Length: 73
Image 1 (tube, rainbow, N blue to C red):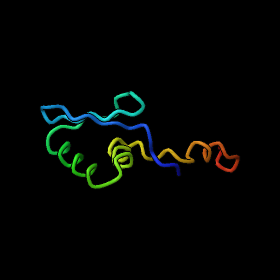
Image 2: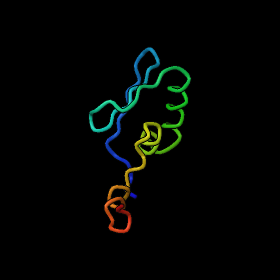
Image 3: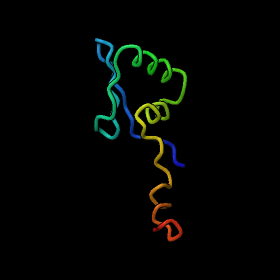
């Protein structure tokens, strides 16, 4: 599965964190969730963390597997 890419995050002054994927809004985190997210980004791979938090981490071969003749119904 390819590594996630194209994510960016920006923390506002009021503690809100906005995550974008290829320029489009993907998630907005506030309060304790935003603090947990920022701590996780600092500790690990930021692209992977942002993909996991936005739910956009399953983008491997699902589409091609769905089109395989064995999986058609």
